[in-house]
Image (cartoon, rainbow, N blue to C red; front, side, top):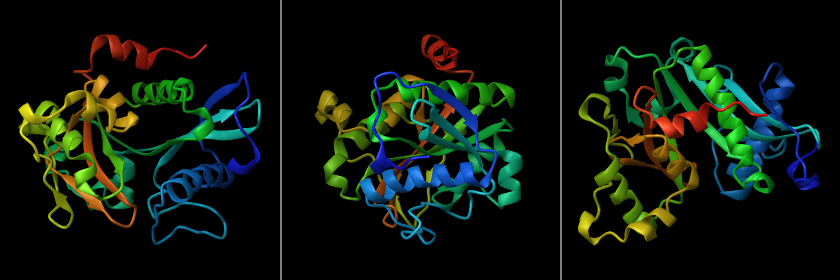
Length: 260
């Protein structure tokens, strides 16, 4: 396999989505995560290995890792990691429970799946790669009869003034109902209700919202109460929740469409 520094996208990628089966597969995922989260976005962490060039944490052994391959260049170009309830029990918690109180989700009695560490190689960010990755995720969701998807998604950086309009718009327009509304923990709690809705320039706020968050919103995604400032990862995190029963029908068809 080649690294980020040794290849770029070709005119006709050959995409394939598969779960990691070996330690080498996991290594390839962690290498891509290092390139994106550490080298590109400046993240850190206790278990980041700069010498090996891998971004890892204690939860990796418990997650399933969904990999997007471009077989035309024999490389992993996208990753997603996913954690079911049974896996979270073995890990002792869901990853996002370090930042958010998940009691509303636990009490819902619904089948849960945590999504995380989603990234795509910069040469493949035209949308096609993410669609293929999501198609694979949709098959996983169907195979495990998942009802609620959730996880943190991030704004890059910790300067709240830089994206106060976007956070405020999320709070006013996309706040989850009380029965599913998790809340950021006090250790990193950041209010999202920073501006009156009438004062928000909506087009500008949407432009500063990360593409992944906008994609979740188009699928009917909702946000929890408060953002969480993650200084180690250099991000401001928001909690996203998707009820598969409430997904917009048109978007759900796109999400579950099989890749040719």
